[in-house]
Image (cartoon, rainbow, N blue to C red; front, side):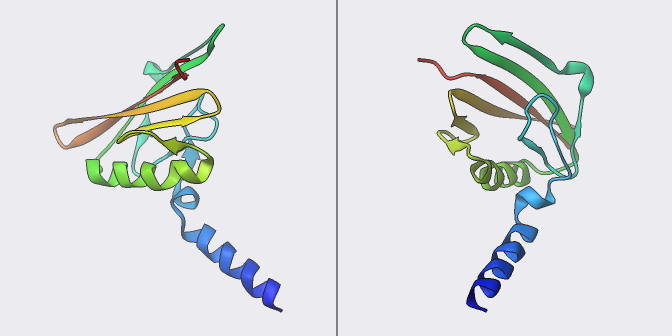
Length: 119
C-alpha cells in the first residue's frame, strides 16, 4: 500500500510539472519542449552535423512574458537532464544549449541554439 501511495504521489507531481504542460517539442531538439503560448517559426530553423557534433538553431515567439519563459525553461530543462550553467545556458552530454530572449512590440522571441560543448 505504501508503494502505491508513493507511485500515485509521483504521478501527481509529474502531472503538474512544466514538462507535462509543454504541448510539444521543438523540431530538431528532440527533448527541448515548446512553452505553451509560443509557436515555432519553422522558416528560420537550421540544423546540420559537424565532425564535433550537431548544430541546431530555431526561433519561437509568443505573447508571453520574459520572466515566464525564463521560469519555464529553468524548471523544465533540468528535468530532462540539462544542467544549468548560466542564466539561460544549459549543458548535457557534450552539447550546449543557449536560449536568447528578444522582446519587441509585446512579443517575446526565443532563439534556441544547440552546439557541441567547447573542449
